[in-house]
Image 1 (cartoon, rainbow, N blue to C red):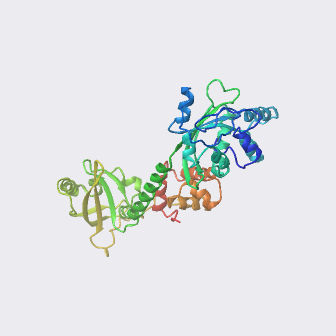
Image 2 (cartoon, one colour):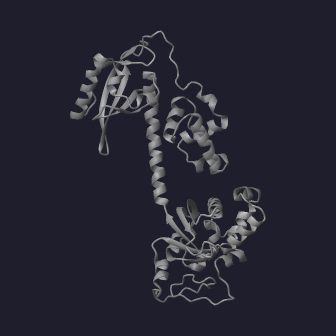
Image 3 (spheres, rainbow, N blue to C red):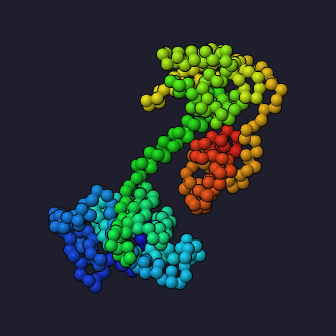
Length: 409
């Protein structure tokens, strides 16, 4: 759906069903109608609502709607199957020109007013003439995935894509296409709905950038800081300096109670610190002796501050060694890095992609940066997460940054 016409060739005009052989039904609102519709000249007459309710709903729907004819695509699919093609993806890989050929077979029967507004088209004529810049490389790839969905017998397809309006504005869109009941065998009708999600995507990118900014600041602080839930005292986050100070991994610290960081005889001090923060926010705290996982105890000065995050409250506790010049008392055992040897598990290419992930880049941005496909990036990402035994990107970034596996680009 997402790349119906790439050039303004005679095939392009046919895809819009602008043909002179058959007369078109003249519509006062100037929209394309009928399988072989001729686009009328703009009129200054007031818009008259169509008598047919269904047609009116299509025309005035508050979302972009398209009606398309995939019958030629269906006939080509039948021909490919009779020629022995079983795996369409492999066929496209061997014959990439086939996707463009199939795109030219799709006929756009009609579009509604919201479609013209979405793509900044003054009318159907301008929209028809501007189809080539609307559909770009990203649209082409999404259309290929739609073809493979229909090839496998699915009657609906949903995906995100990027289009460019006639005024050059980039739009993030959500496409949903469906072959309605009764047309499963012919594909003469395919309905397409397009939602503009540009604002949502912009907000998500802004939020991700902000989160990455403050995450990097939190992790690069020299002070060891842990965040704990005020009511329960459970640690919900820790930075890299805290990992080093306690000789523990991020996974070891998160989920522990703050009181478990100190010897039993000092746990009352930690409970008192939490109570104090709940009643009177502000930096305050006692001298504590935190327990290093593989070394002796270390005297630290604890400072705490309560933070309100929405409806939740957390206390940020920083730990500063009381005597920076005094090393921790060794326990006689050599500290072991819980993630030693992780760097040898990933390839140089995977390390490069991991660095870009840690920099907050999306799969699409990484693909463009490295001149590879989005699918290849996702495959590398999955392999990296499997090798490093992580289950989400947040944990992957934390592990990579904590163990020096990647440096932000």
